[in-house]
Image 1 (cartoon, rainbow, N blue to C red):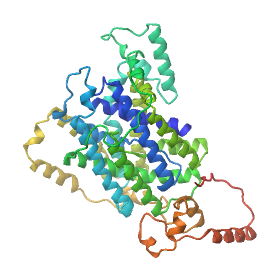
Image 2 (cartoon, rainbow, N blue to C red; image 1 turned 180 degrees about the vertical axis):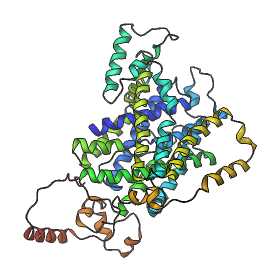
Image 3 (tube, rainbow, N blue to C red; image 1 turned 135 degrees about the vertical axis):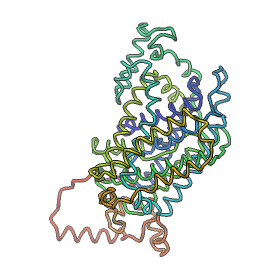
Image 4 (cartoon, rainbow, N blue to C red; image 1 turned 45 degrees about the horizontal axis):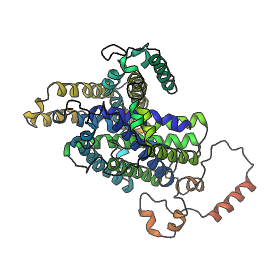
Length: 492
């Protein structure tokens, strides 16, 4: 349950943010369907990841790495939201921008599937270090400040209380203030959007049961601009997930994940993004760093706990009343949740700089210039939308300037310290095979084939269970018994 509660914030926040770009601000029923869909897909992807992917107790959910390029797509001038009408839900669910976003996510996820199952993630890790990841992740949080400010600004007092269980408390306070008429009933007055009776009818309108299905919003389309933007988010998500895998293994007491497990985990995440795009969540899936942190608090590293959480998310996605209830959260409460989550994301990005040499003027320039450019350029383009139609010569010059600074050493860029995280292939050890080999006897069946060693996402030949028993007996005879200090992952 703590893992599920920790994931709630991120899973709920993404559909609520996307609804602004999808022109669904006033369509609470469709928002509820989006929330139910992302719960359903997150549950399915969690089961796939824990069972066949990295096989660590890690939760899958919506990724903020794809949120920034998605909102950039939806903010294009040709997709300006029309005037609100009562039957807008009949139009928005099949809007061209949404189905194009779906198609772009599906195509971008194929790249992640290729990188994962082909073993190319190791190649990317050789060139992408903390100096690249830090501004990328930080800008994901900073780029969403406008959404947080617009929502929180409806009542700053309530917004400042929203952290984890504080969301429930803020919701309750809004309800008390609503029934006692402390919050004004007039729409033009400050604090009106904090009332809890503004979306009460959506719970009655939502059906009890609804099964999400691929293409429920329409047949996906694809655009080159959308795919390129999504690819940037996919690459960032992959690198972040590799770090999550190692952190999860360390906190759960498992050995460092071998290469084949990492490849399989990234490939399954790509498959999860493909499913998310097909089902129409408007987002992808990734490993949740928040749940990795929860392992250190709860001291529970059982896979079965995460499996139970995944099943519960699927059930929640099937009952539309649950998604409808989440849409009734007052806007200031949502804004407070955004303030906390986006602030943590920005800080998490900066924390990667601990591996880089920030006494280097080169590194300071790259990080500062990247952060400042990431804020200035989108703002300038937003204010001057016609300027990008002048040609590509200026773009070529800009890329040439950005790509010509001298190359720093591996130590200066932080890649040497970054790579001190155990990346050795420990797949042939007995302890590693217990955790990371495929379940249901699949690894045992494949171990007799020599071609398995050439497949990047399959475990190589490992010692049999009989060998394991003999080795364990020998170790017991030769060494004194030591107390168990790690948390064992429960095998499926």
